[in-house]
Image (cartoon, rainbow, N blue to C red):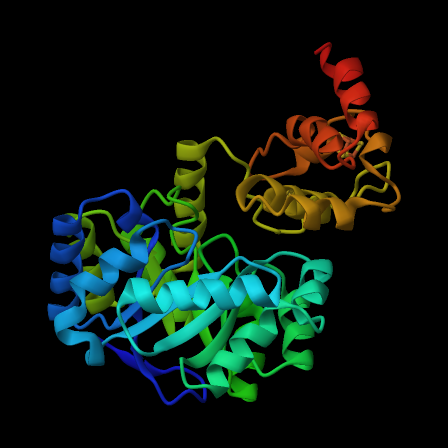
Length: 352
Ligand code: SF4
Ligand code: SF4
């Protein structure tokens, strides 16, 4: 198992990590088996969230015999300082540990959420205080937008960033990781399996490993999946661009969602619509549920999707035959603000 140094934290972390989502759905015995086998295979990074119900408790029990050999991470989705302090205390109790290695602010979607967290009564100050008091070793932030990460780093001392990286979402590999490395911030990649849509999990993982994150967190439901992931880590071979594109096409068949490859072929919309940008925002809306973030971006953009007259030029140009018109028909409703206008529009367009 390859170990990497997590930014300036001094922690040595396995490049394959375990994510906490599955542990809330499986038994304590199954959790014990997975965590023990992962430990035997060299995995030392386990990351969860307060949101994932009893996952902290199960992880704490499963890893108690080798707690000092595990890097334990968790996160809070609370935005206010007092609430986040309560979450940290609960996490310490649930893990049954005196100190948590990395504690993060979970899923900071927009700049307005970041502002709330960083305000005087905001959640960041709970983490910072508990770090100073020795209950947390390092503070992290999980986000889906580079802009949010960079603004957060300019405002506060974050030690670790968690951000999506997979065969489709490559922003982290296109500059963010390098910037974090230069600033001594650890990088933990998330969503390597594109929310479970990845058709070839081994290829998906090898792709991520080859981009060089310090660790990548993988939700693992059983021992068979764990063995596959360990094998992908041991293999570690690269993924060609042809293989990546083929893997996206296969994944797309599984989930019926649109994966724009940003190939830049569809630049000639007669109405001037920025198709790639619109698809990107809508992908974040649809796949990562970054609803407010996507709506914020869409607001005020001209030409908006209202200008689309269904001419079909983009679909004829797209080498991947993406159903752009269908996506835009959905996006022009979903990306409107959450108000009556949206409901009226939905009624008008869909007769619903
Ligand atoms: S279908 Fe809509 S988005 Fe596509 S080229 Fe025509 S106007 Fe532009
Ligand atoms: S041509 Fe298709 S895949 Fe390429 S950027 Fe446009 S929509 Fe995306």
